[in-house]
Image 1 (tube, rainbow, N blue to C red):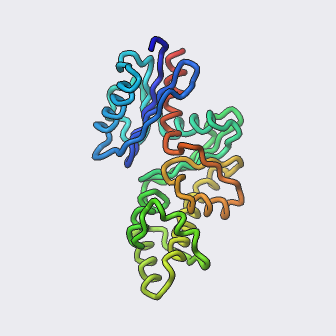
Image 2 (cartoon, rainbow, N blue to C red):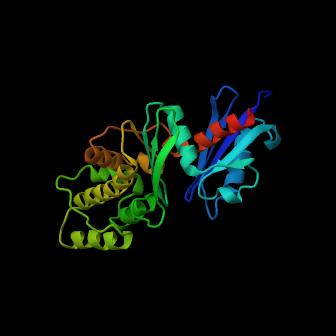
Image 3 (spheres, rainbow, N blue to C red):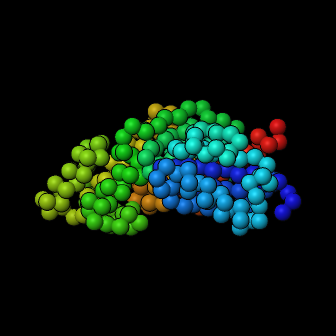
Length: 262
């Protein structure tokens, strides 16, 4: 391959993502793998695999931008860019009509408001508590003995969703178990938990000014129960890109493309 390529790497708390662009901003490849402990080694392995598959060396990449939770430890990148900027860039590239980006990752959630040029107008993050994150759903799925991959569709089977009032993961788990002990259907408890996470995340979005079109990114976007709860509570249609986990890495790759051309 003789044309320059541009690499974006997103090191999250649970997974590592990488996107490789060509000179025309077309996606040549994208990959996801578990982050493991720390994420740095996983990121290096993922990038090496991506380059091998395309017969490239790291020296042949024109520019690399890293973002995400573990970005400070990835020394192979030319530059670090914040998660907020990369998610905004990636989402706007996929859909220029997007004005609100909601990203729910493994350990944090964020709401980002964009203007008509794709610039970040405001943002809010929840990075101090597991409630409102993918970790919250994992803990609750385990408590109800439901596979995490099926948790969203399981919640949609509910006929009488319960109200989960606790906003703390520990107390919400206790509340869910108490409902089960009193004979509540697991589906109704699961629906209440999904409504709780939607309510918490929408609180962030309202703070920055919730505005259509709304895009949901991050691994939790694959949970149909969360998408449905967000749509019902916000009264907005929630769009989900085909690979919601790689939007941040795509944004990083787009930054790499622009940085290399300055």
